[in-house]
Length: 206
Image (cartoon, rainbow, N blue to C red; front, top):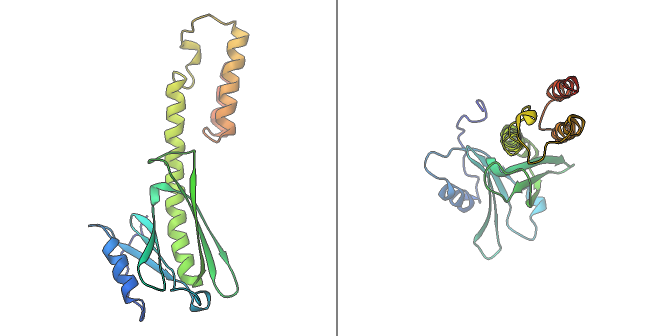
């Protein structure tokens, strides 16, 4: 990221000084606060307003109870699976889906968070930052999973050089290799051109 990762001056809003102070206390050395989004008062009649923010390293959501104290939601960008936004008449709702697995995981359980009634312009800016990170880490996960699948299969494109326990017939071997290639393609782990090239090579060996 370039323009979105540039440091912005975030001025505490009147009445939210404690929330901003709590947010600042969560930042680690070297972490930059990029954008803050505030819930509109209309959506916070029975509770203190929710605040969401994007930093250089993560997404942070904070809410405060009527009796005090803060409940944070902390999602590192590498754990972000999906972010989307829905704009309403009076405010926007930001949806965050995060992976529970370690870095570069692609499957498994997820955590879902919803932040309603946010100011539209602020929510849109945070959404754009989240989208940039989401796309970058999605590609990294895709590459990681592709490498793992290739390693498990002995290297993609080198199935014919592997030494099985029992030697299958050329036709049976080709069918299995075509199935593996098709599976990689359907799961989005290889491109159209990679799939077509691999398929043509397997067929030409028969």
